[in-house]
Image (cartoon, helix red, strand yellow):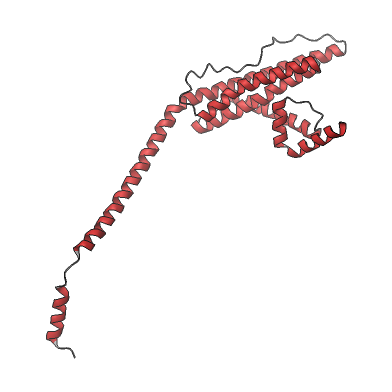
Length: 245
């Protein structure tokens, strides 16, 4: 059995051991740094979210104008497509010796960017796509003019012109939908109806192309898009073209 005096001496010596305050202080500093770092990170995240929300709110009016501009073009494209259909009907009537009916006033298909007065708050990716549309419109118009001079009759030229309305109207309507989804704003019923009409026309044309690859004449941009979406049909078209050659 241990001597009580010995036990008391051991306890006293243990209690008298010096505390390593440097270690304690370092541990406290680490904990404090972690806590402060966590608060700073949370504060940074909160500030960043507030800045992003504020920036999104600042951009919203410009983005809404961009969506309205694209939807206006899509509506114009639907009207232009109907105008092309009327011209095609007139061409067919003349081919059969019939008198064509009264035709609507012809209005060129144009992309009006005036509704967006300031593009500063519009993301560059959207600006790029919006500015590409009028360039593509002009290029396809020139291609059809050349085709009309070289090989296309009036009916074929109007069919090709209608494809411009379908393709670029669909692109505009889809981009407008993406923009509205970003700013959480629903389109009007009229805009939705026009987008749905263009999409139906697009799918109908795509099915015709898929059923007869190489036999349906398309404007270059539309052919490139269909060949990307239907690569197997592209191979069939190339094969038929080589057989004809």
